[in-house]
Length: 111
Image 1 (cartoon, helix red, strand yellow):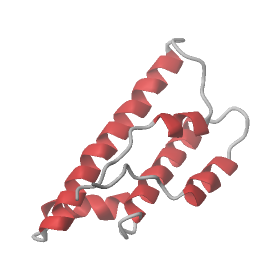
Image 2 (image 1 turned 60 degrees about the horizontal axis):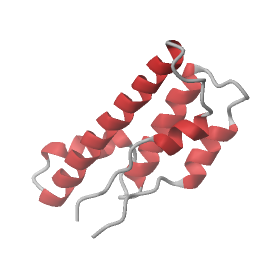
Image 3 (image 1 turned 90 degrees about the vertical axis):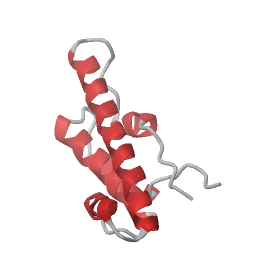
Image 4 (image 1 turned 135 degrees about the vertical axis):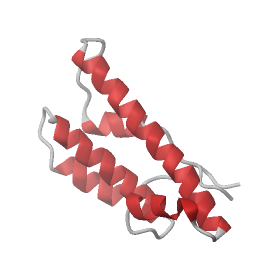
């Protein structure tokens, strides 16, 4: 059984290194997208979009990976937007980009 995946730490670190003390909404968006793309690259897809495009593949392995990835990607963005709403509504202080990335759901690739 595969362990939950970990994104390419170098790609995520590079995204984090670009941001100042108070990240903008775009900083979070770029970091989350870098996390998504790095996760797809674990299975040799170029980007998250590339991985998701295999959801209708005739190759059952690629189709299963794409289906799992797409569901996970949806969960990631749903979580990110829910946390944004909490910040905007004063329900939580603005987190660092690194904190949000650490809180994101993990992907377990199909066997």
